[in-house]
Amino acid sequence: MSQAKLVYRPTPNEPLSETIVHAVADTLGVDPVDLDDRISDCIDPDALDRLFRPDTDGTPSPDGLVVFSMAGCRIEVEGNRSVLVTPSRDVSAATGLEA
Image 1: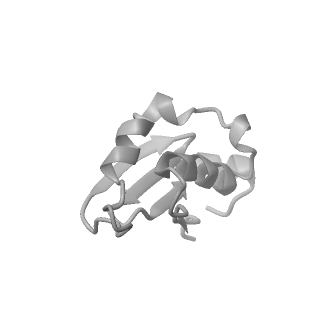
Image 2 (image 1 turned 135 degrees about the vertical axis):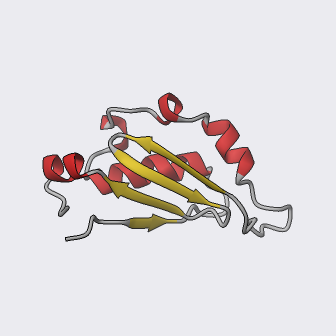
């Protein structure tokens, strides 16, 4: 079976780093404050927000990809500000997610 993969997109005014925290928590089925990792332990959230900031007209940049791990999940952020969260097998088994 394949791992669960969820794609998230921030609202226009939501920082990308905040979307990532909520996406990871949602994937793991926990409250964001209950995550073992903080995003700042894994990546510089301010730099990430700046890197993927939309153009002045609100258009996301189509280029770019950042991949990192947080709370046992693989996080992929694309230039269009989409966030793909893939839990590891160990996290999937521990949280009851299908692996």
